[in-house]
Image (tube, rainbow over all chains, first blue to last red; front, side, top):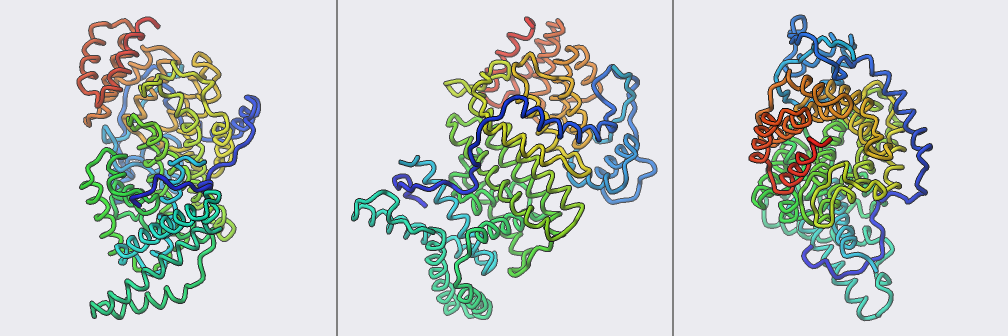
Length: 114
Length: 439
């Protein structure tokens, strides 16, 4: 692997994307619309749009005490309270959550909507 | 004429294929020998092809076999066979095992097809993303064996010492030898579960390139392109699996990979425009949007559309969505901050972190003004680790300045400048803060 800068090989690296005509802004908006519609299904989970904060409240995980992981529980707890998701959904969230949560517990706050 | 970089890529990628294909056949415990065999085959290829070329003086590529991967595979297999035979003569303890592997190699005299090479590559990638291997070791392992970088190259790209790169690699290797019996095939369930780890390591690989402060732009781009290349291979592999199983988790995790690809395309599109001529970083406001790569943006939207399935809006979906919003905005002023804030709120629910929160706050400031953002942040304590505490101070300085709180702003500004990890960021921060109060 040491001497490698002088060879000339005419080959495209595999996996390179095919070039195509750039789309118009309208086309991109259309493609984006599908994502947006799909995304909106999850919108009901949002409680915090950055509106003025009401009284801050930290929700602890009472009622969800079994299970070996603090992090998972806190997410699950928070998630269930916020969006009433199923356990399956909560597990999905937990699966991809990083192990460390700054500020430790899950923060749920009352929001006065903008 | 081909760029030297592309030649380098060619050999790196061949290296990855060889290592993966041989590992699949004899097992990870022979990794040392496999690496030797792969290097030896590549050197032979280099010598043979260069010599033939100078003799015949033909077109540069005339002497290269049609299928260099197959040629290299044969050479490497022979080398490995010789090596294992010698080894088994020398060390009687290993005879029994080696014999089995030799037979296995001899029996697999048919050269893998091109698609098979990629499957082997992914097999190695999925196996290396084992939950017991620390992620920073997974990253080095993938860079070395799958992307074909040397320890020195890895150290240079990840800003770690060569020794550290070696340590991380050995750690991964040792663990993988323990946990991966050579003939262990990953079940579909394991694949589905590992997929999240694979996504994570590819995301990290991309981020290393994207956030890197290397002056040499090609170095940065290279890591991003490697991450994208592997991600596309994973996607291709997944689409083959989806016919075989109807697993909800597979669908969900696959949609994450698609979103990750979209995310990578959107960011790649802006990579060049992010820098000025001297390699300094440019603020979003300062970037020339006509330099954004339209083809990549288009690919981003294609994958984003594809990713919009299943019942899990992952962090990659969120990040891709935010990037998409920026790509759709014709000018900075036309950015739909409300939409971005909304996606940040989703992202924070998925994976709460100080970094996300800060970005969220910045988006809020653009949408509703600095006061709303300060309110939003006032609920949280600044994070303790230095990289993000730099950003925390920087954002607070910016927000207070915009809000007219000069004195507080100055405090945070000094804090941020002290904490800034490098001069480029320090310089960008000063530029931003100089403009903050004028906005």
